Image 1: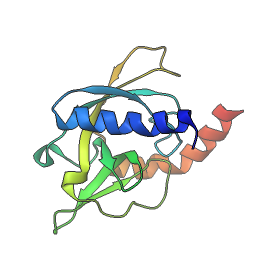
Image 2 (image 1 turned 120 degrees about the vertical axis):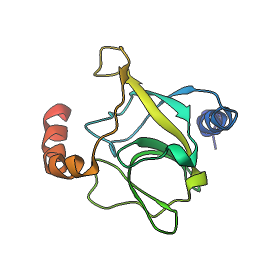
Image 3 (image 1 turned 180 degrees about the horizontal axis):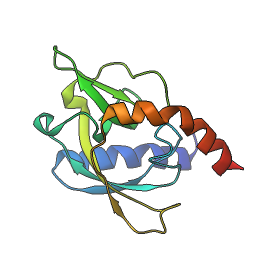
Image 4 (image 1 turned 90 degrees about the horizontal axis):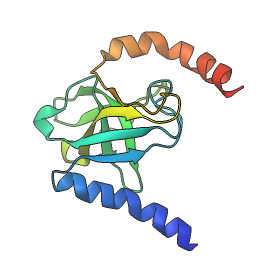
Length: 144
């Protein structure tokens, strides 16, 4: 493992620790799982989240075994687990415990948004289902 790889792995843990302390953080997202809502390279503002604040349609940060993911809340099961999904994907994620959700995305800035932060509003998961077929087309157009 190179020195740079270790630093990259430590930064998400630091953000997670700050969120657990009740602090707001800004982190850079990578990947396309939340396209077109989030793009690779966007900066997101994340505020600490309590289980009582998690509602369907919110974009949250969840601690997984090897990584932190930024996905949308689809619903909460009767058992209390939370179902997440990336906007770009058809399949939902495996259920997560509410304690794994460490933050709520409240702002987005950076690449493709003229570096001005925009507020994040809760979206109805049904709307996401309607626009999801067009995400791949939009992604191909923007990538070319």
